[in-house]
View 1 (cartoon, rainbow, N blue to C red):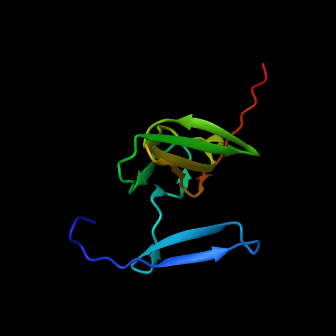
View 2: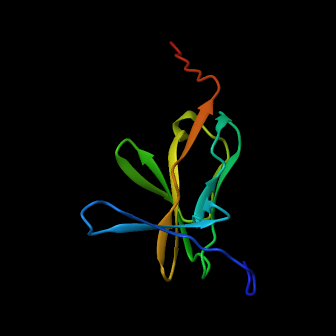
Length: 128
């Protein structure tokens, strides 16, 4: 949006029952307005070239992007760019990913994206 645009802002206040905390959600055209997203979320062929892209509507703009992969109950830091490239994706690259976008006001993480790798996994045993 730019200066002079007309906007409608709706604030929803939801309390957790103990009166100590609340959450605020902002909507744009009746849709939740989140500032960090990842695309694509897909099932991809093993061996293909794929790029996950982290985007943000932050103001001021994002200074740092960080990529993470969920590995069982561990979170692994795997990159520091807006785009995460897989030149030849393999079965072990499958799993859940998310990115974090940060600027001088703080940081926000995206929702989880699940990459499913399809295709045959060939295991060869050579006996000499």
